[in-house]
Amino acid sequence: MNKVIRGRSIDTIFVLIVFSIFAFSVLMVLMLGASVYRNINDIAREGQQEHTALSYIWTKAKNYDDADSISIGEFNGLPAMFIYEQIGDTDFRTVIYSYEGWLCELYSSAELNFAPGDGDRIIQIGNLGFRDVSDGIIEITVDNKRLFLSPRSGS
Image (cartoon, rainbow, N blue to C red):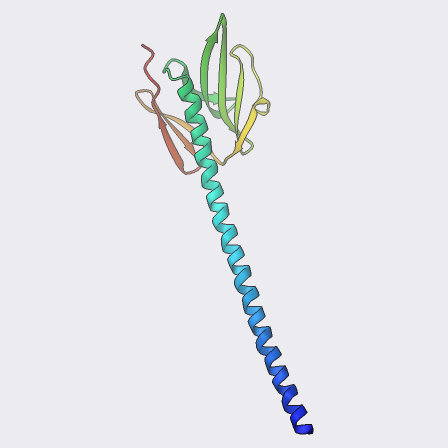
């Protein structure tokens, strides 16, 4: 009778060890899967923010689609796109720039001067750049995505 009890306790210990190894393996696979999912989600979100930022800038520029209304330059030392419009006798400007990791927009009278921190934050981005390529074509870059904008001629 003593041998039967001893044999069952060895069998029970063996089953518990196998079950523990199985449970540990399942836990490790779940943790690895969660890590992979988090990395993929971060990459997708990053690409989405770049695309959203470029779409926002393109839409803003197309609302004032005139070569005389859009220019690029610097806003307090930051690369920026300027969009000018006239309402009545007053000139207004929209400045689109990047400040502290955010795509920002500042709409004001063209005569007033503001600091970069005064603009509205739109979406978090990395690097933002504007470059005049040729014949009025503007290259806009957000991190490693590019967009080429060609406003209509002023005539």
